[in-house]
Length: 265
Ligand code: SF4
Image (cartoon, rainbow, N blue to C red; front, top):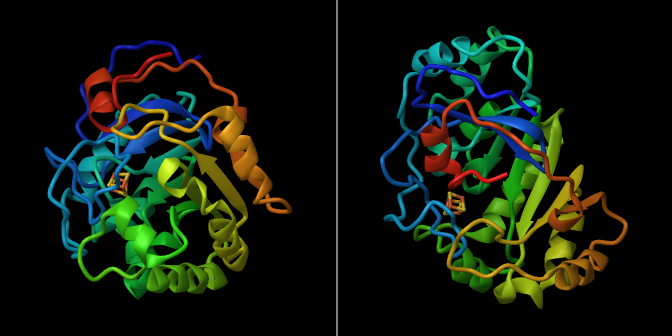
C-alpha cells in the first residue's frame, strides 16, 4: 500500500491509483481543463458530458509546469508508470512529446499514454507516442455505425482511418502496444468482429473492460465477459474481472477525483 502523506496540492498530476493494466500509475493530465476535452463523447465516459471538440492540437499546459509538480514527489514513492490520461484525450496536447522527454530527466519510471487513438492518423502524434513505453489504444467497434453509436466522435472521424493509423504506428513503435476494448450491451454481440480487428492489428496485449466506474452505461456480468474472452482466443488477453485489485492512497484526493472519479478502496 502507498502510505498516506502530506504533499502539495496538485493541479496536473493525480493518483497514484492502482490500475489493473499498469500497476501503480501516477496520472498526468496534459489538458487540465475545467470540463472534459475530447473529440469523442463515449456513452460510458466517467468524465461526464461536454461538447465534443475538434481534433486540433494545442498547448493546454506548459511542460515545465507539469515537470515542477512531478519533481515535488518523493523519489522513493511507489509508482510503476507515469501515465498520460487525465480530463480528456491526451494527444490533443501538442506538447505531449516535450512533456515525455522532460519527465525522463526527473523520474525513472516507464511512461504510458492512454488514448482514444483518433489522432494516430497524424505523423506528429505518432512521433510523440513513439516516445512512450506503453501505448493503450481504444477500439470499441468493428464498423463505422457502431463506432458512432458508442464513441460519438466529432464529425469526420473514420474508424477505418484510425485502424490503418494504428497499424502504421505499430510498424515503427518499439514499446508495448495494448488495445483497450470496452464491452457493454451495445457491442457485446459484435465481440467476434472486434476480435478480428484486433487480430489484424496484432497488439502485444488486448485488455477487455466493461464500465465499472460510475457512468450511464451498465457493466456486463462476469459471465458475459468470460464468453467474450473466448472470441479473442490465441491472443494475449487480460480481462478486468480476472485482475487483482490493490489498495492505494492518492497524494491528492481532489485532483484524483476530478479525473478518476471518487477513489474507493
Ligand atoms: S475517449 Fe476517453 S475521455 Fe474521451 S469521451 Fe471516451 S472515455 Fe471519455
